[in-house]
Image (tube, rainbow, N blue to C red; front, top):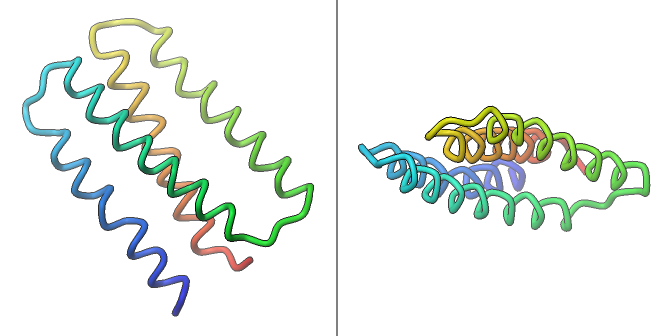
Length: 108
């Protein structure tokens, strides 16, 4: 029950943030909006991670995942184009939300 409540709280604001970001914004405004939503999700991920009882191996796994996420999403920025920052932000946001979902569903 506690995990279900935590998951509901974790997902309530991001859905609103995403809907707000998709309303006819130009590339720069869309990127800024998505980065803001990503930063909020990233803070939630850090808070969720801090509440978990983890060993050194799990911490190493999380550090490796963070490096992977950042590198995978940087490809969108490096690819270029006017919407590259928005694509990178969307990638960061989506991957972070998925990680939150997986951690919230996984018992400590």
